[in-house]
Image (cartoon, rainbow, N blue to C red; front, side):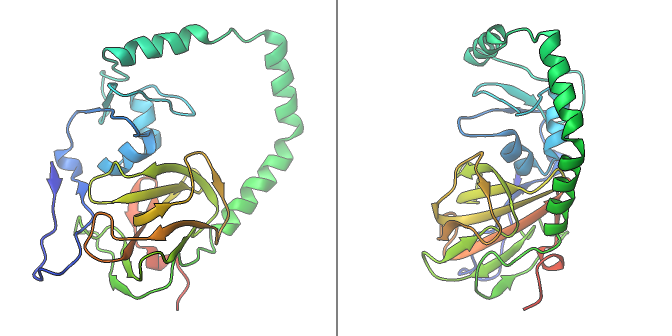
Length: 249
């Protein structure tokens, strides 16, 4: 069930809707184009929790027709029809890992441990410097109480550049989430994700790594009635106020 925000003005842009966690159904049937990240975003969940409840490991493969549990419990990773057969074929194709290979990987991991730690620290440091994803006036601000205001809305013109607010990897690029229009979700690290909605063109694909300031889309009015960008930041799956992260103008 969706909670819709109704405004007093007939000219106000269509709001972003989000599932109310208290009314979240027990299961979700996966549709084509959906990812663990987009489904978790839809229901206001942490993608790691969703994956854990359904025993899905990285890179979090899911299939159309698969039923995912949206709450912790016994039912998890339920497959139906073609999804079940596809999952079995994928499992059957996996080759057993030799002990020598395991030892080699562990040795390589130990050698690169210090370097990886340094890289992680560097990325975390960069996330302290979020940048504005586009130019324009903020005409709708964040509200924890209002399900239609889980981010900020920035006005602009059609085709205006939309930039990555921080470096990361694209985990969703499509238009499968109701009232988000053409949407991009970027994973910055295990804690933070950001979303860019209502675009006219999507310029990056899922799995692609992006740099801060990189142009990822063009502003549009998909899912709304005026050219705008709806921008969200989520911490551990929960919406936070982007204005606390973006530099003051």
